[in-house]
Length: 173
Image 1: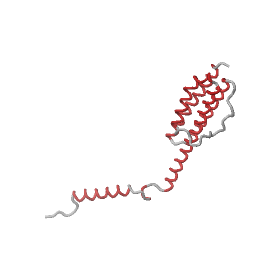
Image 2: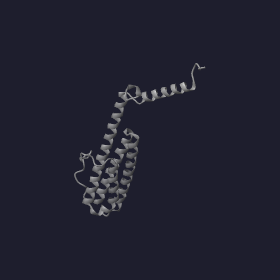
Image 3: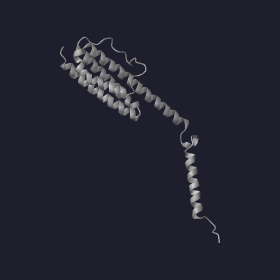
Image 4: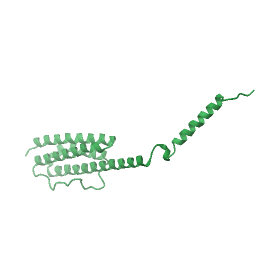
């Protein structure tokens, strides 16, 4: 005699078919997948903003590196003290994506370094502080990954500014 009603086998088959249908529906790229064009637009805008922040930070890093080079060339006595800081600035620039395609700095570079090594180091320290402050201000607009990078580089820049100020005190006139 044959059973009437739902059997275990038919219940499992129906459940499997239902689950497979749900999975296949969720994998589509259509409007039913929970993402609408507004979310995609917001994502694209956030990506562009992050790229712009990273490019601006790289541009200011390239200008800062050029400033280190000018000070070291104009005042050879400072070369040994500037070398590790310059290497760190170069590493930060690489972490930010390398030198920007447009090598022009974001802010106009001063026409010439100070004639005095102490003054040149103080000016370089002020530039490091300015760049660090700009990067710290950009944290509010950055995505979490870029914000961590900018915070780290800004903290290093603040430390560089302190070290440059101390180097200026120790440098003979």
